[in-house]
Length: 404
Image (cartoon, rainbow, N blue to C red; front, top):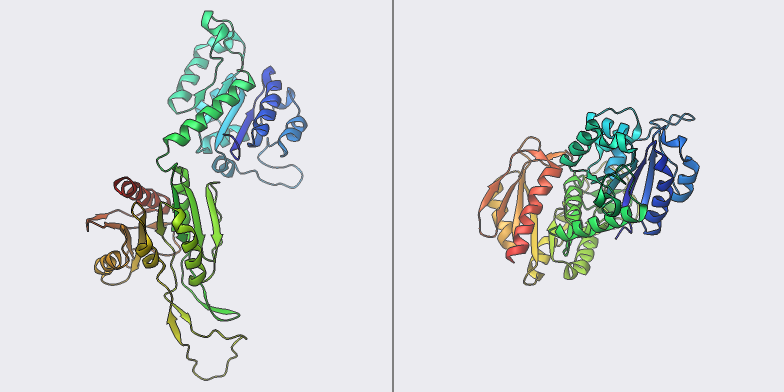
């Protein structure tokens, strides 16, 4: 269950740091990709070379590399990880985590992490029993951290064993159990969703094309939201410079509307639903020039022919139980045009946005939408980030999948 999982392993200044090497070896053996972060004190107990050899990655400890000034981004690390595990965790490190004392890369990454955080305390009994330590552990738990202590044996009969770091085998089993439980709780864990994103480009000649201003940001936000809820995402995207993060996103890159249609028709029968978020060119040049068109000083005419309507093709092909959602970016008669598209394309719902709305549309990081369902009910949303908009859209998709 750890195969392909990205884990940040924090190692702090405890005599139990030797267990980190065993823990790291077990995580890698299970297929996890592990990035080790060490505090300065942690390096006094186990060498970074040992952990680097086991992980296959340089061990990080400083914000900047002394040699070339390379900066290690705690934000990127926090976004990259599927889980953060601090083992061993000293009383000092837990105190810094609670109070936001960001004097090392480990604690700074913790404050940036959006993933579950697991903490395995390791210290002597008196330190463990001190009210400040107990309070800090309680606070971390209230913030969603999982505190890992030895769960049985000596603990059942008294104080013996308290403060001791849990054994690596038990920690790995706990992580596996957590990921299994988390996957079962995800509402889309058994679903496969087709998603289109970005523009399409239609060639005029070898160096020019017909396209639009779509950045793909809305589609990629939807891909990450769907994957975070457990779905396998089949992302078919036009020419964009964006990258996906979640391992559940399978990307197919295309250029033209015809290529996008072909990819969608191949994938759609395997999927439970589709969200057509791409800004597909409505027309293409009938006969693209084989060579670059030279300036002549005369007017140039291009014969344009219609491209296939991909959303309509899928809407007409969908089988019972499948859900298809479309987008309508309008400049005039927004609601009327969106409702016509909803009916004509046999969609389950359509997402309407308008270029007349400030902060909505192409290229930006925000959007303002309305969702119109097959029951013709309209729900309006305020201006939000595209990540937040993606959450609203996927909420509606989940509801449709349940009712279908």
